[in-house]
Image: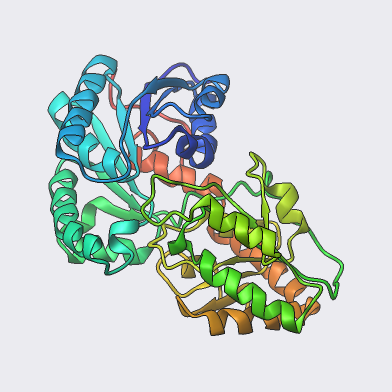
Length: 388
């Protein structure tokens, strides 16, 4: 065990995010004697973080809108937090921690500030009036925050290029990690026996922008061609997101037999095992969707959209199929094609596991993050902070 070398503070807009996206990184840091603290709102995952040796500090963050007063209070809280905790490195995840946390960390004199941009999110995902009005403001806020950042990690090249070309971040500060990675031991490969029965699964938050509505409509059409086909939905209902799908709508789909809505679970592997194809027809500005990486690791072919983030997780016609966004006809044809071809599904799943191993291994991604934090040298595993 390497002796204690430093203090890392991870900040996110939910404890759920830290638990679901950062635990492999946290475990690696802990194994090297680094003290890890998470600052995030109190939720059902906060106790799980504490149980795994992560000191949790409650940090209220309003996610629904930009509110000048609440966001000013958040910035003040972050400044006081950084001044009190004196971390060696602050790692911001999600939009508000990135923007307000970067400014607060600069004022508090934090030694190193690292930001992760996990997709551009709701404001950049469409052309509704609210999105068009907010976009210039959010871009200006990003531009100001990025000046006070040592490194900015993007999960796909499209987002990185957008930030650089828009003048929001200097190219020298930016790099691409291709998602948060996937634990190839935890998400083990499953080699199916070809079957004429096909089960589709959409795994993600219940948001219209995730293409859930398109998935349900395509399911209705595919079932007419392939009556034995099953269509599963698994994910949390997120009322804090402007694009959330009300629970009564999902219950109606379930009641009508359009889909089977499954209770959320802390371990999705059992459900992924039963699925033959994972579908995510998203038009949300994703980073690289974790569900697609987990699916590939477990040998599941993927159908997703030719959108930033989503397309990084698939080699079209090799590990899955890419379709245009917001296109129910294309989704129907892609799902029908795989439902009718068990051998093709099996071959795509095997190639998907190879892709996950070569590009998305969480060990590689975490090493890149450690290097960006400035606490590991490239090609070395031992951590060291720049402070005594």
